[in-house]
Structures are given as C-alpha cells and as structure tokens.
Image (spheres, rainbow over the protein chains, first blue to last red):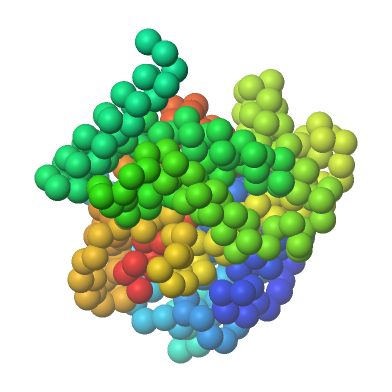
Length: 129
Length: 250
C-alpha cells in the first residue's frame, strides 16, 4: 500500500532549502539512489522557481511499490502549463519541459482548475538501490 | 638558468600577454594567463581546504579572483601579475567563506561530514556500479541517514545562497560575472519554454555539462568522469547553471 506525505510550503526563496530537505527525506524513505534523489530535488526546485515567490503550494508525495509520485500545486503562474507541454528537444535549446523530462521518469499536469495547476512528477525506484 | 632569471622571464612573458589582452583585446592571451597562474590559485586554495568546502569549489572561486586581477591589471604597474593576483585570489576566497557564514553557522562535524561526502559517493559508485542509496552512504560513513541528508543539504544550500545573493557591489563574487550584457526582454512564459538565450552566457564548461546531461542524457556519474569533477560538484554546477539561467531571463 502506498504511503503519503503532504506539506504546505511557502513559495518564497528562503524555503527552497527546506523543500530540498523534505524531498531528500522522502527520497531516502523510498530508497531512491543518491543521483535519483538529486534529480527529484532538481525537478521540484525548478518547478517551484517557475511558480512565483508568493503564497503557498502543497507538496505531496506518494511512496508506492517502486515509485515516488510527487504532486505540486496549485501553481498559478500564467503560461506554466503551456510551457510544460512544449517538449521541443532542439539541440542547443533547453526548456523547462526538457529539464523535467530528463530528471524524472514521467511528469504531467493533473489539474487545471481555476485554483491553478497541479504538476505530477514521478520517479521510479531502481531495484538494485 | 637561475631561479631568479626564470622568474624574470616568466614575469616578462606575463607582461607581454597582459599587453596583448589589454591593448589588443586578445582573449587568448587572457586564457593563456589564466592557465599560467592556475597553479598559484590551487596553491592558495589549498590553504583553505578542510573547512567544509570542496577544494575544487575553492579553486573555482580563487580562479575568479585571478580573472579579476588580470582584467584590472594596469600595465603601468611595477609589480608582477603573481604578486598583484595573490591578494585578489585570497580576497575572493575569503569573501566566499564570509558570504556563506560557513564556519559560524554550520557545526564542524557537519562540515567535515560534507567534505567526506564526495569521495564516499565516488567510492561507492565504483564499488556498486551504480549510484548509492542514502542508507548505503550512511553505512559507509558510519552515521545516520538523517546526518547524510543534513550534510548534503548544507553543501547545496550554501552553494545556492552564494549564487542567488545577487550583485552585492563591485566586489561581488558572482562566479558567472563573465556573463555578457544582453537584452533579455522576453515574456515569462516564453522564458520558461526556452532557456536558450541564457545558455549561451554560461561558461563553456557549464554549457558542456548541461549539454551532456540534457542532450546526451548522461547520468551525473558519467559526466563527472568526463569532466574530471566529483559527482557532487557536477550536481551543484547543474543546479547553479539552471538557477542562474532562470534568473538571467526573469
């Protein structure tokens, strides 16, 4: 059965390190390898960096059998959902979608209500780790 | 040739390179000067090793001091570049530590654990043939997983802090101060879609690391091998570069 961890985090820059510690703690419980933990931290960090600096967002983790699913939202920044759709892998160009596509196993926009979007990031746990 | 004669010749060659850089705008002369004086930077950086900061990071900061010294050197000066650069390099390193407040805010045990982390990851990666888990790192270091996470975060947080502190006056030690000025008048949504304009402003090593990570899809361990840095350092450079690129476009 999957286990769940949820926290509300301020979007202010000063809380980036707090978020990173939370992500690393969850990743450790999920037995992610160090490099995968680092990837997940980077994904969350980049996403939050695009979400503005005011207000709060919910950060929830689902620790399932062989995966960690992270949901972040609601995020209100205009254009973020569109930017996440643009997976244009043109050499020399680096997009947010490309970054996420590289560092997590899958990602997507789960909700697009008036409250803002919720982004899902999924990282698989290597069996050998 | 005597040591004194050798030093005099070295200083004369420096002076010629400085002249070519300052008078003729020869950037290769500047690169040559940097290469010639990197041993000095490494020697000075070693004095500050063991304070909870990877030596390679200190060297990088010291290299910024060297670049500043080269750029600010006035040809009319009667001193050698090495003499002029030394206080610049040391000053840059000291400012780096001061800005981080490392020694004040971080318990020594955590600093030491952070300093041991990089070699432990490399050792375990080689032994296991994959990236180690936190539990494996903790076991190897004979500490708890929580202590490993704390020590890792200490390194990441301070690195981010020093980068995101932004311009702090003319003495500001932004590692990417060589970034050129360019009008980045983009809409925010466009910026999210493409970080390309800022990509071109990164130093070539950082650009190459991003290319290997995101275009070739190489894991950090392989990138670390290719560029001769530790995995932790590669991780920090990726994080820094993306944050700086984002800030550039914001």
